[in-house]
Length: 446
Image (tube, rainbow, N blue to C red):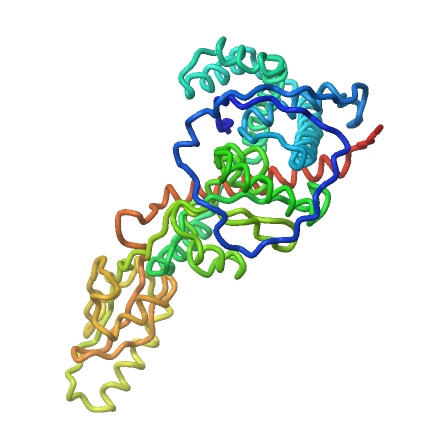
């Protein structure tokens, strides 16, 4: 999984220590301002680099590895460069906390990679990653590294981070790929959910989630989120870069892209915020249990009115004038037959028994079906066969053999499978890291 890449001209500001965190009360979930989409590609103007001080020496030991003041300073500078967040006395503690957490995770990942002797990340792979980063911002690898060095960041710092990250993603993918693949049942369930949500309002969201436990508590999460919102709205820091570096949501690897979210599927406080945001607006921090969200409304849509369903039927012809006894007899026959039917066997069974008619009704928009069929088409599980349905033509057993959202925006099976695979891999990776951290000996020296 590649890094989100951004060239930045921001100043590498003072890395202060011991700055108090301001106790800012949470704000209501309403729009904080509108973001400039061009900021995702455009570098900030170069500003003068202030002086800074940061203690040297060992700050933390992670099992048999150490994190020094120099390591922390380098990671903070790199974090600032990647996100274009302008350092201030108020947000330096949050930047320092995030940099330290990232270093601890990286040390644990590096130690775990040692156990897999066959997994070797070559210099060529690291070089290719740097080349791609440089190309995406229209420069050469040499110019890109030179820019970082001018800001006080050693090229080796970036290379080490990339080497560990590439190796870790290869390890996670190789170890959990088979477990992360979604079953057919899970894919079918996801497709049903998409279909059922087709007519509901939908939101194309960017998200940043600040986990309270990771940053020193709920108030610290709120404070840090406020600082990030200010940087994105007022200073033009790119949302995607900030999300990748600061968010702990699974979407962080995709620059905070949460995709299309259906109305009513998120917590009420988040739904309220989504209803208030216009396209292009960033929310103020939204406190929830365990952390704080920042939402970016990329787009909205009312949803597709088309809800497509594939139907087959077995029927007994009965005129509207048929007697109650005839209707009851036909209903009893169909009810006895129903447990034996599937979408695959319906037509063959109908042609093998006298008095039965079978037909493939194909795919149709639910709204265009006969009223008697609409309830079955909307609510029955895919693969099920309904109880007898009475129409002016007779009694019908209706098989629901497929369902999907209509329209050009509806995802196909492959898209759903890939989405579930990413979600499952992210979940397994988080568990992996929690286990490593739980078993580790992490000691703070200062």
